[in-house]
Length: 207
Image 1 (spheres, one colour):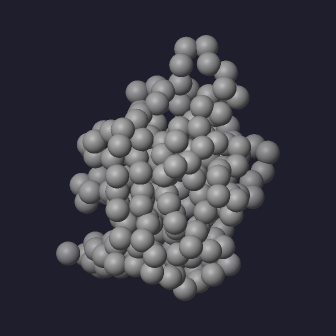
Image 2 (tube, rainbow, N blue to C red):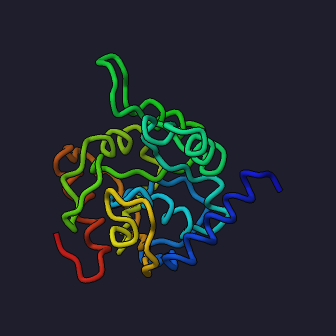
């Protein structure tokens, strides 16, 4: 077992110990199919929770999106995201000639699954903010990739924005039914429908 594999096993065990990291598959089975899991975003722990809730065989082919400036700001964070999670780095500060979706497109072309947060930033308002256009463009380019709405519950209480020490609280990750971009569906309608699909996975939630 490599150092990265040992660290991945340790992190998944710690995540389950602290949060339970319970995965509920309400709309799809945990199958090894290429997917984009898109979820609400409330904490730096969000993608760790999704990763820990996936079966081990899916973790190996599922890559989280990570802000390059934050997750490469120290050698340890860079090693963790690169070697353990095989993260796809995106630039939050970019020039006009940079396509922010390029790293995601390359990962999908390679056959990887992704974990993304269409809000683009963390929210402490309970319900997701309006989704940005990236999910729509990926759905256009990769119609054969399943889009899985995902709700992460309680993680904001484990590690609220600005905090660095997690608090043990039971969390759940609920995976919904796959959705696709419909013929002639415009961007605004699709993004609204995608956000509603995520909120529908919230226990007792409504948009």
